[in-house]
Length: 77
Picture 1 (cartoon, rainbow, N blue to C red):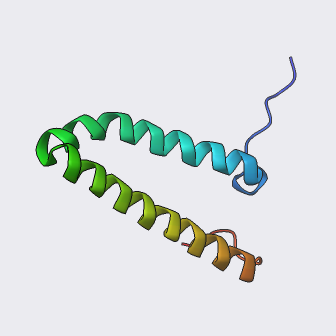
Picture 2 (cartoon, rainbow, N blue to C red):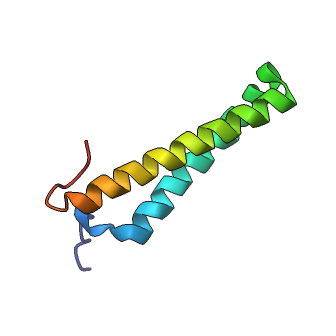
């Protein structure tokens, strides 16, 4: 049996990164949405989720722009 290749953080690629990020966000949302809607109510809960989605999208855009301008780095952290 051949040894398994180790997954290196730089070899995941764009598609793999997008899939991993989506899995994380969907997983967290499934657990958090019922509680958020129970506490805030339907209208305020939906508005809060939209605001968080806008902030998350903007953050992703800023990290992507940083990464494109600084390709020599491994991560933005």
